[in-house]
Length: 369
Ligand SMILES: [Mn+2]
Image 1 (cartoon, helix red, strand yellow):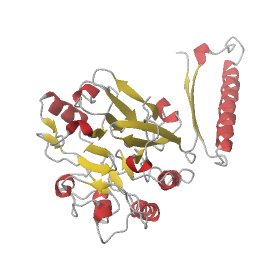
Image 2: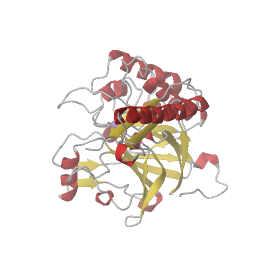
Image 3: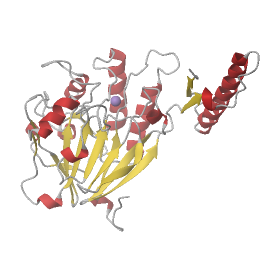
Image 4: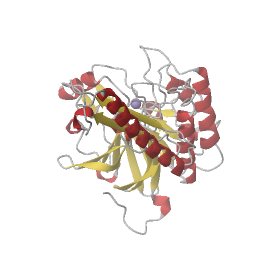
């Protein structure tokens, strides 16, 4: 696990709240779950405020749909405005060419330097596959957030024959951060571009070794078929940390890539959008604290997320007496009792989080053929 040296003055530590795959608007029409994504996004922003972070970094899929409802955009803007605007000064200096970093934006400047805006916590985001702009020249939800000054939208790339990523350069005290972002591209296409050496990752011209290099992307990390994922080894070896969006399973400990000598951190989503094992793990955001090229990742468990208990019953492995006159009754009884146990467990977890009985239980059943 990574650490920071002792006794560092706080003015030299750059603190970032890292979250990904917030999926605002997911199931928003559902009578039970409709509020879930908004509640949790508010929790994320509150944590950022309470922990006094310098910025918020989102790894894509802030929205669940590429065309979110008006209500969804409205609620998103209201929440960011509530938590990220105000008189608290921003302590990071922005050093790179903003017109280059944000060249796809109508106002290609970092929001907290805009004299017309009063930003207390700048939000930086790439887009994911869900909030991807649809078609060339179209306006995405992140473009709306960028034009309204709510989000610094970076890492958008539209040339599909080559990719060139230049970092956002920031400094706080003696700590210098080179933040690389690449918004979602089709995995096959991006893997091919890496394979053909058509991806260039630029480095600061001077004192390259002094910069902490963090790369955020939104791609398959898990092998989901030939060439439809990005291997860690495709990324440049000079990186210190990779933040991997898109994978919804939250892994609170970063993985060390021994070949490339960098860490990979997978924040996971803040809401379960599918009924699978990876989504049943507890959801977290992280506070990434950087000092020079040292960093520490502190996971913060999210308390508003509906507990999700998932299990599988394999009837062949259960001690059910199939020789009785009506074996289906035995099965019915077994399954009912099992599911009641799962519901009890979910109710208990929900109670410990004060979620008054909000939870999801999903159980799949395998029957002998
Ligand atoms: Mn996602």
